[in-house]
Amino acid sequence: MADRYRGTLYVGVTADLPARIYQHRQGSGSDFCARYGLHRLVWAEQGNSIEDCIAHEKRLKRWRREWKFDLIERANPQWVDLFDVLI
Image (cartoon, rainbow, N blue to C red):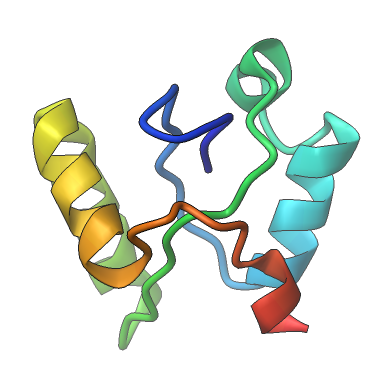
């Protein structure tokens, strides 16, 4: 989740991405997203198991911001909101 191009980022994991994005947009998804107005889904990845996804989330949270920007921009160079693509 992001607030704008190369802005504040949030990395999380969920079993139901559309429902989780809806929660974030309503302000109930996480205090961090609510506090910083993160409403734009700019990157998502599907994993094989929840355990693998949680391990990947923990790795991503340790990454430098620039690495995260590069990851996002390889798939979504304009940082468009991908939520509508999910539905």
